Length: 228
View 1: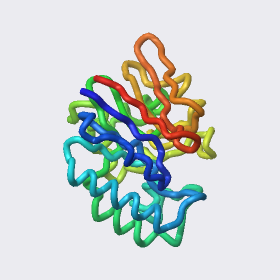
View 2: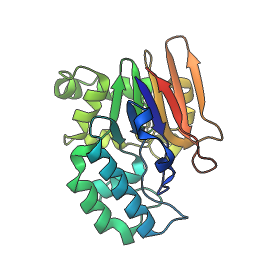
View 3: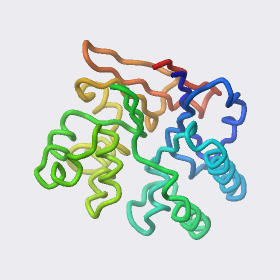
View 4: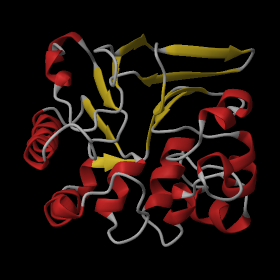
């Protein structure tokens, strides 16, 4: 199955250069909002077009959430830098109306796609806790567990920033810093993430795990392709 992964857009519309028919899955890695370069109108129109694409190709297009999206979806909680008060009402209405089109993670075999990634430390502390295991344990894979967790009162566990990003403890799947995920990527999975800006799309591999960083769109138009 041929995948193409679109890194953090922050309002950019260069995803429209992709030939949709050439891929089995088009995965948007999150962070559709918040830009120091683009107008409110441009950002809003771009995400409306992305949602329209998802509605036209519901089984092909995967929309993941980023930390710059959830502070509109769940306003007034989980705010981070870049938040635009001028867009809050429109974006909150748009995200909440289309909430069922977005998810935290997508998984194909042992390939896991999300905004920032899962580390062993975060997984051991959160996903193995009795409460979370009881809520999410019936899901068939890790992506399903994370997506279920987002729909519960415990969703804030997904949105924790770690020490490297000004928070406490370990960064969650929308906030894990490259300094955490580089050395502590979850055993047994090949993860594809954004969130951390890199000059080139790069993959760090170990025997039974890897992490591919795709957030390059601030400097170039390049998307990550993988056949699974």
